[in-house]
Image 1 (cartoon, protein in one colour):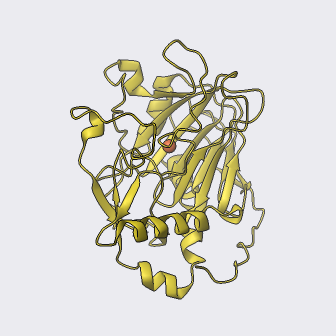
Image 2: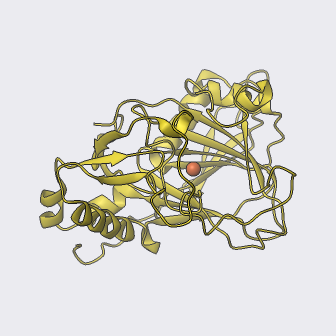
Length: 309
Ligand SMILES: [Fe+2]
Protein backbone atom coordinates (compact mmCIF):
# COMPACT_ATOMS: atom_id res chain seq x y z
CA UNK A 1 0.00 0.00 0.00
CA UNK A 2 2.66 2.52 0.96
CA UNK A 3 6.30 3.35 0.54
CA UNK A 4 8.48 3.49 3.66
CA UNK A 5 6.91 6.00 6.01
CA UNK A 6 8.30 9.46 5.29
CA UNK A 7 9.65 11.58 8.06
CA UNK A 8 7.21 14.22 9.24
CA UNK A 9 7.94 17.73 8.05
CA UNK A 10 10.36 19.68 10.18
CA UNK A 11 8.55 21.82 12.71
CA UNK A 12 9.98 25.22 13.30
CA UNK A 13 8.83 26.75 16.56
CA UNK A 14 7.89 30.19 15.41
CA UNK A 15 5.34 31.93 17.58
CA UNK A 16 3.95 34.86 15.65
CA UNK A 17 2.20 37.89 16.99
CA UNK A 18 -1.02 38.79 15.29
CA UNK A 19 -3.02 42.00 15.08
CA UNK A 20 -4.95 43.23 18.06
CA UNK A 21 -8.72 43.34 18.11
CA UNK A 22 -10.86 46.33 17.35
CA UNK A 23 -10.60 48.95 20.06
CA UNK A 24 -7.97 47.02 21.98
CA UNK A 25 -4.20 47.27 22.22
CA UNK A 26 -2.28 45.66 19.37
CA UNK A 27 -0.20 42.48 19.65
CA UNK A 28 -2.56 40.80 22.09
CA UNK A 29 -2.84 37.56 20.15
CA UNK A 30 -0.19 34.95 19.37
CA UNK A 31 -0.15 32.07 16.91
CA UNK A 32 1.84 29.37 18.68
CA UNK A 33 4.04 26.53 17.54
CA UNK A 34 2.53 23.52 15.72
CA UNK A 35 0.90 21.07 18.11
CA UNK A 36 1.94 18.00 16.11
CA UNK A 37 3.47 17.00 12.80
CA UNK A 38 -0.03 16.15 11.59
CA UNK A 39 -1.51 19.57 12.33
CA UNK A 40 -2.94 21.77 15.02
CA UNK A 41 -1.95 25.19 16.30
CA UNK A 42 -3.10 27.27 19.26
CA UNK A 43 -4.04 30.92 18.95
CA UNK A 44 -3.94 32.63 22.32
CA UNK A 45 -4.64 36.09 23.67
CA UNK A 46 -7.83 36.56 21.71
CA UNK A 47 -11.37 37.02 23.03
CA UNK A 48 -13.77 35.58 20.46
CA UNK A 49 -16.80 36.96 22.26
CA UNK A 50 -15.80 40.30 20.67
CA UNK A 51 -15.90 41.18 16.96
CA UNK A 52 -12.65 40.52 15.11
CA UNK A 53 -10.97 42.76 12.57
CA UNK A 54 -10.57 41.75 8.91
CA UNK A 55 -6.82 41.44 9.49
CA UNK A 56 -7.32 39.09 12.39
CA UNK A 57 -9.83 37.09 10.37
CA UNK A 58 -7.26 36.70 7.61
CA UNK A 59 -4.63 35.56 10.11
CA UNK A 60 -7.03 32.96 11.52
CA UNK A 61 -7.90 31.64 8.07
CA UNK A 62 -4.20 31.41 7.17
CA UNK A 63 -3.54 29.41 10.34
CA UNK A 64 -6.52 27.23 9.43
CA UNK A 65 -5.03 26.49 6.01
CA UNK A 66 -1.51 25.93 7.36
CA UNK A 67 -2.37 23.74 10.37
CA UNK A 68 -5.88 22.39 9.61
CA UNK A 69 -6.92 22.52 13.29
CA UNK A 70 -6.90 25.84 15.14
CA UNK A 71 -7.38 25.84 18.91
CA UNK A 72 -8.59 28.96 20.74
CA UNK A 73 -8.18 28.21 24.47
CA UNK A 74 -9.89 29.91 27.41
CA UNK A 75 -12.94 31.23 25.60
CA UNK A 76 -16.22 32.10 27.31
CA UNK A 77 -18.86 32.04 24.60
CA UNK A 78 -22.62 32.05 24.50
CA UNK A 79 -24.07 30.15 21.59
CA UNK A 80 -24.82 33.48 19.91
CA UNK A 81 -21.24 34.69 20.32
CA UNK A 82 -19.92 31.41 18.94
CA UNK A 83 -22.26 31.73 15.98
CA UNK A 84 -21.15 35.32 15.31
CA UNK A 85 -17.49 34.37 15.22
CA UNK A 86 -17.99 31.32 13.04
CA UNK A 87 -20.29 33.26 10.72
CA UNK A 88 -17.43 35.73 10.21
CA UNK A 89 -15.46 32.87 8.62
CA UNK A 90 -18.16 31.65 6.23
CA UNK A 91 -21.80 30.71 5.81
CA UNK A 92 -23.02 28.73 8.81
CA UNK A 93 -25.25 25.85 7.77
CA UNK A 94 -28.47 25.06 9.60
CA UNK A 95 -28.37 21.78 11.44
CA UNK A 96 -30.80 19.08 10.41
CA UNK A 97 -30.95 17.22 13.72
CA UNK A 98 -33.94 16.35 15.87
CA UNK A 99 -34.09 19.77 17.53
CA UNK A 100 -33.34 21.76 14.40
CA UNK A 101 -36.38 24.01 14.80
CA UNK A 102 -35.30 25.23 18.21
CA UNK A 103 -33.81 28.69 17.70
CA UNK A 104 -30.86 28.27 20.07
CA UNK A 105 -30.17 24.83 18.67
CA UNK A 106 -29.89 26.35 15.22
CA UNK A 107 -27.41 28.97 16.44
CA UNK A 108 -25.03 26.28 17.75
CA UNK A 109 -26.27 22.77 18.26
CA UNK A 110 -25.34 20.44 21.08
CA UNK A 111 -23.02 17.46 20.75
CA UNK A 112 -23.12 15.30 23.86
CA UNK A 113 -23.07 11.80 25.29
CA UNK A 114 -26.44 12.36 27.00
CA UNK A 115 -29.70 10.54 26.43
CA UNK A 116 -33.12 12.19 26.31
CA UNK A 117 -33.19 12.41 30.09
CA UNK A 118 -29.82 14.15 30.33
CA UNK A 119 -27.97 11.05 31.51
CA UNK A 120 -24.60 9.99 30.04
CA UNK A 121 -24.86 6.98 27.79
CA UNK A 122 -22.18 4.95 26.03
CA UNK A 123 -22.75 4.81 22.27
CA UNK A 124 -19.11 4.16 21.44
CA UNK A 125 -19.76 0.68 20.09
CA UNK A 126 -22.41 1.84 17.63
CA UNK A 127 -21.32 1.59 13.99
CA UNK A 128 -23.05 4.91 13.26
CA UNK A 129 -21.47 6.89 16.10
CA UNK A 130 -19.00 9.75 15.89
CA UNK A 131 -16.49 7.53 17.65
CA UNK A 132 -15.64 6.21 14.18
CA UNK A 133 -13.36 8.03 11.75
CA UNK A 134 -15.44 10.32 9.57
CA UNK A 135 -15.56 13.69 7.91
CA UNK A 136 -18.62 15.76 8.69
CA UNK A 137 -21.64 15.44 6.38
CA UNK A 138 -19.75 13.78 3.55
CA UNK A 139 -23.17 12.38 2.58
CA UNK A 140 -24.16 15.86 1.38
CA UNK A 141 -23.58 16.97 -2.20
CA UNK A 142 -21.85 20.06 -0.79
CA UNK A 143 -20.11 19.00 2.42
CA UNK A 144 -18.99 21.63 4.96
CA UNK A 145 -15.50 23.06 4.73
CA UNK A 146 -15.15 23.77 8.44
CA UNK A 147 -16.50 22.48 11.73
CA UNK A 148 -16.34 24.38 15.01
CA UNK A 149 -16.64 22.75 18.41
CA UNK A 150 -16.68 24.55 21.77
CA UNK A 151 -16.13 22.62 24.99
CA UNK A 152 -18.82 23.35 27.59
CA UNK A 153 -18.57 20.39 29.97
CA UNK A 154 -15.98 17.61 30.00
CA UNK A 155 -15.08 14.49 31.94
CA UNK A 156 -12.26 14.92 34.49
CA UNK A 157 -9.86 13.26 32.04
CA UNK A 158 -10.05 12.03 28.48
CA UNK A 159 -12.86 12.64 26.02
CA UNK A 160 -10.33 13.53 23.31
CA UNK A 161 -11.00 14.22 19.65
CA UNK A 162 -8.50 12.80 17.17
CA UNK A 163 -7.78 14.23 13.74
CA UNK A 164 -6.14 12.28 10.90
CA UNK A 165 -4.41 14.26 8.17
CA UNK A 166 -5.57 12.76 4.86
CA UNK A 167 -3.23 14.98 2.83
CA UNK A 168 -0.26 13.40 4.57
CA UNK A 169 -1.86 9.99 4.17
CA UNK A 170 -2.29 10.51 0.44
CA UNK A 171 1.24 11.88 0.02
CA UNK A 172 2.68 8.79 1.70
CA UNK A 173 0.95 6.33 -0.65
CA UNK A 174 3.04 4.47 -3.20
CA UNK A 175 2.88 5.73 -6.78
CA UNK A 176 1.26 2.43 -7.73
CA UNK A 177 -1.56 3.01 -5.25
CA UNK A 178 -1.94 6.64 -6.31
CA UNK A 179 -2.40 5.48 -9.90
CA UNK A 180 -4.80 2.74 -8.82
CA UNK A 181 -7.13 5.10 -6.97
CA UNK A 182 -6.90 8.08 -9.34
CA UNK A 183 -10.33 8.95 -10.68
CA UNK A 184 -12.28 6.66 -8.34
CA UNK A 185 -15.44 7.95 -6.77
CA UNK A 186 -16.82 7.02 -3.36
CA UNK A 187 -20.53 6.74 -2.63
CA UNK A 188 -21.48 8.32 0.69
CA UNK A 189 -24.75 7.71 2.45
CA UNK A 190 -26.00 9.06 5.75
CA UNK A 191 -26.82 5.43 6.43
CA UNK A 192 -23.45 4.25 5.13
CA UNK A 193 -22.81 2.03 8.14
CA UNK A 194 -26.36 0.99 8.85
CA UNK A 195 -26.08 -2.40 7.30
CA UNK A 196 -24.39 -3.64 10.47
CA UNK A 197 -26.23 -6.07 12.76
CA UNK A 198 -28.38 -4.54 15.47
CA UNK A 199 -29.06 -1.26 13.69
CA UNK A 200 -32.80 -0.57 13.34
CA UNK A 201 -34.30 -0.16 9.86
CA UNK A 202 -34.33 3.32 8.40
CA UNK A 203 -37.24 5.70 8.20
CA UNK A 204 -38.40 6.27 4.66
CA UNK A 205 -39.35 9.87 5.34
CA UNK A 206 -36.74 11.41 7.68
CA UNK A 207 -33.37 12.96 6.82
CA UNK A 208 -31.91 9.45 6.75
CA UNK A 209 -33.91 8.84 3.59
CA UNK A 210 -31.79 11.34 1.63
CA UNK A 211 -30.28 9.92 -1.57
CA UNK A 212 -26.62 8.85 -1.68
CA UNK A 213 -23.99 11.10 -3.25
CA UNK A 214 -20.61 10.33 -4.76
CA UNK A 215 -17.37 12.28 -4.32
CA UNK A 216 -13.81 11.76 -5.55
CA UNK A 217 -11.77 9.39 -3.40
CA UNK A 218 -8.85 11.76 -3.97
CA UNK A 219 -10.06 15.31 -3.59
CA UNK A 220 -8.14 18.48 -4.29
CA UNK A 221 -8.16 21.22 -1.68
CA UNK A 222 -9.88 24.19 -3.32
CA UNK A 223 -7.51 26.72 -1.76
CA UNK A 224 -4.12 25.00 -1.44
CA UNK A 225 -4.47 22.59 -4.37
CA UNK A 226 -3.13 19.70 -2.27
CA UNK A 227 -4.63 16.23 -2.74
CA UNK A 228 -6.21 14.31 0.12
CA UNK A 229 -8.10 11.08 0.64
CA UNK A 230 -11.84 11.51 1.15
CA UNK A 231 -13.46 8.57 2.91
CA UNK A 232 -14.63 7.54 6.37
CA UNK A 233 -17.62 6.21 8.21
CA UNK A 234 -20.30 7.34 5.77
CA UNK A 235 -18.48 5.87 2.76
CA UNK A 236 -20.60 3.07 1.38
CA UNK A 237 -18.76 1.72 -1.66
CA UNK A 238 -16.76 2.72 -4.74
CA UNK A 239 -18.59 3.41 -7.96
CA UNK A 240 -18.12 0.70 -10.57
CA UNK A 241 -16.13 -1.60 -8.28
CA UNK A 242 -17.37 -4.90 -6.84
CA UNK A 243 -18.66 -4.16 -3.31
CA UNK A 244 -16.21 -6.44 -1.51
CA UNK A 245 -13.26 -5.03 -3.43
CA UNK A 246 -14.37 -1.45 -2.82
CA UNK A 247 -14.93 -2.05 0.89
CA UNK A 248 -11.51 -3.67 1.23
CA UNK A 249 -9.84 -0.75 -0.54
CA UNK A 250 -11.63 1.82 1.63
CA UNK A 251 -10.69 -0.05 4.80
CA UNK A 252 -7.07 -0.37 3.67
CA UNK A 253 -6.81 3.35 2.91
CA UNK A 254 -8.54 4.28 6.16
CA UNK A 255 -6.15 2.17 8.18
CA UNK A 256 -3.24 3.76 6.34
CA UNK A 257 -4.25 7.41 6.74
CA UNK A 258 -5.11 7.04 10.44
CA UNK A 259 -1.69 5.75 11.46
CA UNK A 260 -0.33 7.57 14.51
CA UNK A 261 2.14 9.66 12.52
CA UNK A 262 -0.78 11.28 10.66
CA UNK A 263 -2.89 11.94 13.78
CA UNK A 264 -3.24 14.90 16.13
CA UNK A 265 -5.11 14.10 19.36
CA UNK A 266 -6.72 17.08 21.05
CA UNK A 267 -6.98 16.90 24.82
CA UNK A 268 -9.89 19.20 25.55
CA UNK A 269 -10.15 21.80 28.26
CA UNK A 270 -13.37 23.64 29.06
CA UNK A 271 -13.41 26.86 27.05
CA UNK A 272 -11.53 25.46 24.07
CA UNK A 273 -12.99 26.42 20.71
CA UNK A 274 -11.64 24.38 17.80
CA UNK A 275 -12.09 24.93 14.09
CA UNK A 276 -10.93 22.27 11.64
CA UNK A 277 -10.77 21.70 7.91
CA UNK A 278 -13.04 18.85 6.79
CA UNK A 279 -11.46 18.87 3.33
CA UNK A 280 -8.21 17.28 4.49
CA UNK A 281 -8.99 15.68 7.86
CA UNK A 282 -10.89 12.77 9.33
CA UNK A 283 -11.87 12.97 12.97
CA UNK A 284 -13.42 10.88 15.73
CA UNK A 285 -14.35 11.17 19.37
CA UNK A 286 -12.34 8.94 21.68
CA UNK A 287 -14.03 6.97 24.45
CA UNK A 288 -11.00 7.22 26.74
CA UNK A 289 -13.07 8.01 29.83
CA UNK A 290 -16.05 6.56 31.66
CA UNK A 291 -18.55 7.49 28.97
CA UNK A 292 -21.62 6.28 30.84
CA UNK A 293 -20.61 8.19 33.99
CA UNK A 294 -19.33 11.62 32.98
CA UNK A 295 -21.04 14.24 30.84
CA UNK A 296 -19.31 15.57 27.72
CA UNK A 297 -21.07 18.54 26.14
CA UNK A 298 -19.86 20.67 23.23
CA UNK A 299 -21.50 23.23 20.95
CA UNK A 300 -21.04 22.83 17.21
CA UNK A 301 -21.36 24.81 13.98
CA UNK A 302 -20.46 23.84 10.45
CA UNK A 303 -19.55 26.23 7.62
CA UNK A 304 -20.64 25.55 4.07
CA UNK A 305 -18.00 24.28 1.65
CA UNK A 306 -17.91 23.62 -2.06
CA UNK A 307 -18.49 20.57 -4.25
CA UNK A 308 -15.44 18.29 -3.88
CA UNK A 309 -13.31 17.86 -7.01
FE1 LIG B 1 -17.99 14.84 13.37
